Length: 230
Image (cartoon, rainbow, N blue to C red):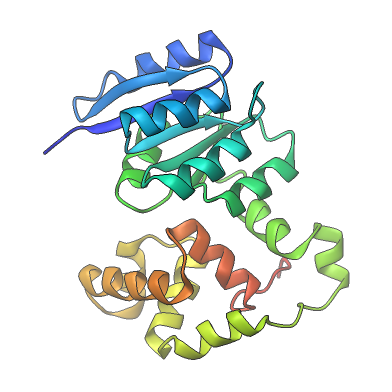
């Protein structure tokens, strides 16, 4: 099996070297390059064709959001955002730009490795501290607005997609949006994991989204999951 090709983008040399050291411990990984700003990340991605890009958000020349948008539009590379989580608006914009995962910069090395593996496999790993906060605030406004305002009306496009989903595909999407893995969804719905993967592939195709993160955002936006805490 070919190694997972990784590009590291961060404006701090210490962070780049630390990530390169962490990822270099995995035999199934190959760090193919690094970049110190977003434009450098775009250029390096087009040249080196990595499978996964670890992307900082706040950088000179071109920030991580702009770089993520260009990379996901022009290549098949998956982008995992690394952040200090001090700018929620950047995170929400990164979701719209096509990011496949989010990690805090103080994340344990094991989770960084898992995030790269998940992204390369077409899945996503969102650190627990940010998952629902990103999705709920990114699709429904601030937490205070979500609690006070009703769920917005479905757009015609979202309504069309919902109408095309089978009952089982909706069930799988709801379980996914609740944070379950493929294996956990399979157990909950009494089906095989291969069947879950098939349903998820159908959901991604019908919704016109590229990965699980985008599918979960769609589920919240479409009202399949309440946008406020129970």
